[in-house]
Image (cartoon, rainbow, N blue to C red; front, side, top):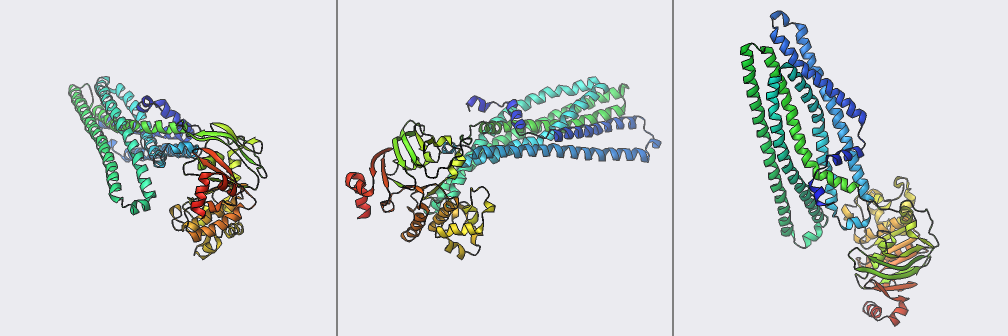
Length: 580
């Protein structure tokens, strides 16, 4: 999104955003009709007061008149409350659908998008930006609708009553709107800066709290305190700038309104003294004028909030316009018994520097194919391409004779499983983690879950837990040990029953005792499956049918363990250091 668009607020873009949320037309329509009735009743009161005062007598003050006045007030409240509720409900539905659209869009974005956007920033877009739009729609839009109806109705009646006094009253309108417009533009600039800073601050907070153990062990409390205080101070300064603008708007509007009242009241008093206007008409005129104050104030608040929503609207529209991860419409294809073939694959992350260069290999059905080499050589990138997180710059990745990008991504990913050293565990129960991503997790029988846990050597420690499968694992699985988290990940893979298995340093971060148990579980998982393994510990891959040695994005050696020890100098050095 270019800077010009970021600075300008396009009203049509705002309306387009609202239409995309499919607002309830009938609810808005009924709400507006209710506002019309409520406004009509409000307009009837000053006219009734005019006639009552001009023709006042004790006989006219009877029970019917009092009942009529009370009834008018009651029905005004009922219709006003009903219409405001319907309009607010319609607004809440719009915001809920916008949040659904943003969330659904984000989870359908390719991994490369998240490489460039911090998770805290995206959370802020889903929560904070939509909250700004929500305030416009639910808090101010309903008031604006009834306010516009009131302003039009009152102005027409006042023109019929006394066009000269109405003209005097309308002089203040352009002055008022000119001031609001200028202050509103400044508000928009401050609001956009505030939203950006909130997004940045949210990202920093989320990062610090998610790595709280690193912060503690690094004794970085002072660093994080200073960083947090700087972010808080920036938000404070922006809040002060916003408060200054808001604090100016209120008194300015009050001065203008009071000036109008004085002028109208003075002119009206002269008219009454001359006999050109009745006292009832003057009081009715002033009552109508007071009725205008609330809609004008509501319009001012709406315009101010509308400017604040400028940046949020642009960002939400920008996210909704992003291109989603494709490939969901591909073929439904069973990969069992087929070879995985990399053919002259080249890849870079967009900076022009090649990460993989001319990578070719074949992983045959049921074969264990291993990758070794220095860190940063491109081994994990190979896995990312297999998972279709990224597309090769050139070359092909085939399953059998079919390029994998011709398969539905959902179908393809459902047939592969990935176990990494990071042992990804989500907050929730053990059951939640084991069934995560399955089509109908609630329908997975306990028997099948316990079989997967047995195969992963995890059933014993789960049974010892008081809550069993319903045990809460904590954020990122912190209530479990590293070995337990890894075995839960392996059990999850068993439940998926993958045709293609990928292991990325699956035992690298474990102690020797846990590594032995986990390795046994992995051996069970690998049995009969095509398996790709990344390992720094060569002891875990010496039995692989084929080992590829990758350096600087190139395959510099391939063969069995014995062949590479004999023919590849760097692999020989690795083996000497680790296995001797």
